[in-house]
Every structure is written in C-alpha cells, then in structure tokens.
Length: 181
Image 1: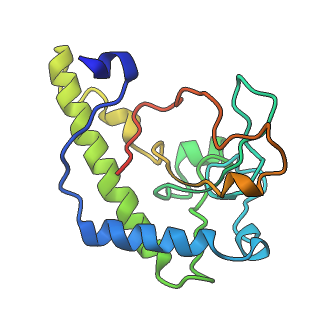
Image 2 (image 1 turned 90 degrees about the horizontal axis):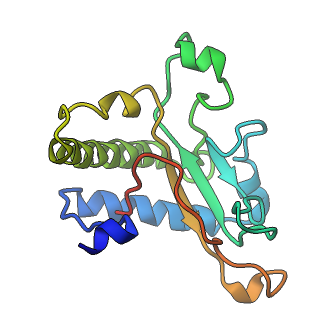
Image 3 (image 1 turned 120 degrees about the vertical axis):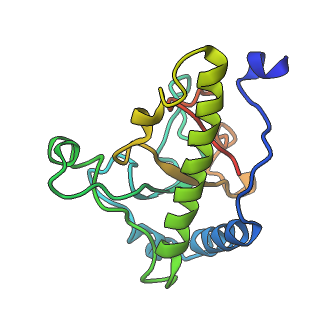
C-alpha cells in the first residue's frame, strides 16, 4: 500500500465543483493583485495564522533559504470570550480575507473552509474506525478554530531572486490532516 510509505491517499469527494471553481478563482484573483494591495492583508503578530504571508517569509526546517511562495490563511472565527482566544490571541483572531479588494470573497472562502473541514472530519472518522478507536476520537482536535486553510501560490521560478530558492523545501506537514481538493 503506497499510502503507508508516502502518507498520501486519494479519496473521492462530494465537494461542489462550483464552490471549488469559485474559491480557486477568487484565490487566483487575490494572488494577481499588486503586491501593495496583498500586503494590506498581512496581520502583524499572527504568525501566519490568518491573512497574507508574502514571498520569502517561510523557511523549511531543513533549509537556510526562504521558500519562493506566498499564501493566504484563514479559519473559522472563535468567539471573543473563548478561553483559547484569550490565551492565544495571535492564533485565534478573526479571519483576514480580501473582501475590500474582492467583494464576496470571505463568504466563498469560509464556505470552502467549512466543507473542506467536514471532508477532513469524515476521513478521520473512517481512519479512527480502521484503527479500532472511537469514530469521534479526532473530533475534538478539529473544534474551536484549530483547523487552518492555507492557499498557496507559487510564482514562476524565473522571478525568484536566486537559483537557491525553491517553491517549498522538503518538509513534513505539522498538522493532523491535509486536504488538497
């Protein structure tokens, strides 16, 4: 079983093709904005938990050279009085999405986040049963805004400032589950 060696599996999903097309179209439009407009969605102190993260900001643990990628991150908002938000405000702030430049984007991307998270939850429930543990074992790990959606854009390598840059250096995802719809 190749997935045991790679950690990747293909699954058929029921996500709306219209929603996927709309979300990816809006993300394409966002990453095509001039740099100064994208920079308006950078959230100081958020450590990449929400908003825009520009080129050459992230560096993989195995590298000394920053990655040639940019990203937009968001998750479901956690209520203001929630203990996690009080303790970790940088991690549990409100989502920062580009509605000022692309009206309606927040609604579409939050729905994309919701349905993708639901798909991840269903996959984890199947895995839990296969592991012989309670079906809902992983559910608590997906509650209260702990799930992040990250849209990545990899500009042409011809534009990179040097030959040593790559889109994303070798790495392992640090989260519970990654979906690539």
